Image (cartoon, rainbow, N blue to C red; front, side, top):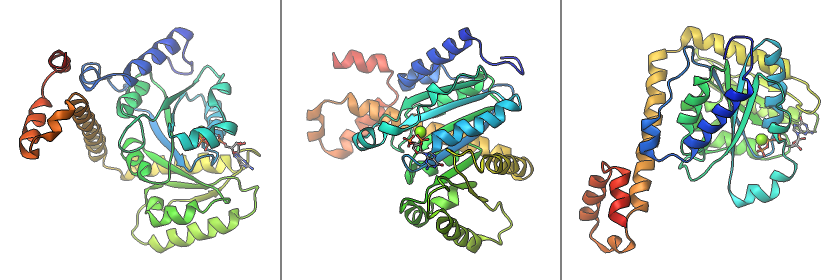
Length: 309
Ligand SMILES: Nc1nc2c(ncn2[C@@H]2O[C@H](COP(=O)(O)OP(=O)(O)OP(=O)(O)O)[C@@H](O)[C@H]2O)c(=O)[nH]1
Ligand SMILES: [Mg+2]
């Protein structure tokens, strides 16, 4: 992808196919097909928050600003596959695919599958692959207030936490320490009553942490539907990127991402081995079974399939 241009249809197809292949890849296949990051790693942005908070719509608004600056943007949205969210939320959610018509914007939704942290099994590979196609920004949309934020932290440069006035999620988020994982906090749906109260609560908590000389997450009021507060959000993200460029230990970040990636590969490999273990095996004493299964971790997938049949 050359600068200033978007993806041509052929590149879009190639990217779509790569992502699909990675989604279904076993650990072995994933290891064999690891993508190289692009020459310049993308600016990675995580947009996270409770279901229906307006994450997709904020991403669309933000993308519009960034496209104007000739940036190429790839969006990966993790779709929660839990039955609850399928029923109640999918109804009026914003399908970004339908608004992603700009040639320099690429949007892909992937199911969250069974990943232990609420993301998606091969998320690290998916992000690397997107980066390999030369986007300036790679945006990861995830639903959560919970475990997800901590995982997203290891995957992206800037975590944007989206809160809304209409829910009690804020208080829960604060309890779970989620606020501490955020670099920028958005109170979206500020056109609805109660937004000011949430902002005051969040600000009070953040100010308590002030004084360690680190980055202080700005709290931004926005309305995605009314296109308000988006410039402020965009600006806050850029300020955070500039702060990172000055303060972040690149080596440590690279290692942390690599560690997350490896943890993910190991957990998936363990699941593969468990899935390939006959039910009767679990009658065995755990120490012996443990040794046998650990030995099985290094077996190739083909061997395992061969043994089962
Ligand atoms: N009043 C109001 N409604 C909004 C605002 N932003 C989004 N919405 C509405 O909230 C609903 C969900 O918006 P989405 O952008 O799909 O939210 P999301 O967080 O991506 O949702 P999921 O991906 O399903 O978790 C839609 O009906 C939007 O129209 C806002 O600023 N104000
Ligand atoms: Mg969404």
